[in-house]
Image (tube, rainbow over all chains, first blue to last red; front, top):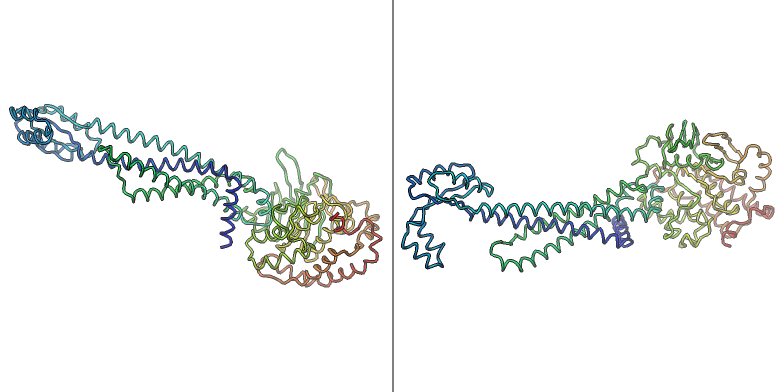
Length: 295
Length: 315
């Protein structure tokens, strides 16, 4: 118990002594972990939305009126790789859908269709198994005789996916670079703390204090700095998410910003642990390198 | 207790610090290491405390093969070695008491043992009254006494001293030597590197002389310089005279007597047995010395260079 008090006391006293350097290290941990947290949350939002869209968005192949056996084509397409489901929409169904859904607010278009229902073609609606299968299915359908035109949201979906992936790669790269900087900064604060206490360390070693006895306060100091940085990152990240959620959710119907609180908490705990690990690594590096500790 | 076999130490750039040194010091021995600067005295001390490792040869310290020991075992070895240096190495922001108790705290000794031992050792070095002072409030001699107390509070088997009187005036030095002698009498092996002719000549203990990294003389009851022996003996008669008894001196004498009655505590894996044995064996000797010190009081005025050290320190 008194040992714990000693170790904690030493760590806190050191942090007080080098408060500016400690502040720098804590800020570096905070910024990098904030980015990691943001990336995790953003990634979760993007993939849950993409999953949503993939259910809504289909490839639609409009069929020539002359096509004799739409059922056979449907069965054939259903066998293709990457196709999850194929629905045949007959001409009358398509007319109904056009009037009641697509042009629900457009009476002039409705009257044109009612005059000549033949202009609305029958179609196959295809749901791909995976977002990535859009392009393949669409181009393969275009080559099928009897298919008038293929409409798919593949291009838009692809753009969205590549935007998400690009942003994630960028954020991860930035977070890793900042994580390395945070490790280096923590190593630096520990280095200074060791230097400030070199006489004491020398005497501890002279009288036979064990290596761990000498090292633990410094390790703890680094971990404490990482912990504080991580806690601030999660707190600020959570606050920013709540704020952003309220601001954007109302104006945007396209994107659903909702993330489960469980996810936020779980990743938050991970981030804090990661901060502690960053601190431990930083101080461990410093302690292995430092000559006052080593001998 | 200490054994060096054909020890050679080379530093970077081919500098030969020690060349084929063999040395044996038994339990309770007092060994002076003498020789000019750069002759290898300090290197020898650093090798004995395992701060450095020999390039060649073997070193045994307190029954352990120090030169082959993995570094994680070194802290344990250090607990059987007390060290005293020319520059005291005290922590400026700790009091006398804290500086001494620090050595016990960082080796994880229970606090009741610390509360028991520190006052006893402070009494031994005559600093009981100044236990709340900070090092900067003490004279050089007093600071060195704190450093000796810290080295001894662990009850080490071996005490290594590198020029412990190098920063002190002759009279103050005598005070330090008296404490080291007292520690030696408890059965602690003392190895002391020094330049101080007067001290070596006065003590007439074993002298190991180094010259460019080699042992050139190893003499029991030697003097600083070999040829000066006859003359030294004459001088030593004078030097061994006890000075006037001041308050501090009386305290020292009392502590000396107490030392023989120190309780044997648990928690001294290395030193307890040896100390107990030494106490039993040395009790009579210590008492005799205390008594003879009192007897010699009348002769004190004859030794002008032996004025009371504590008076000088305070001025």
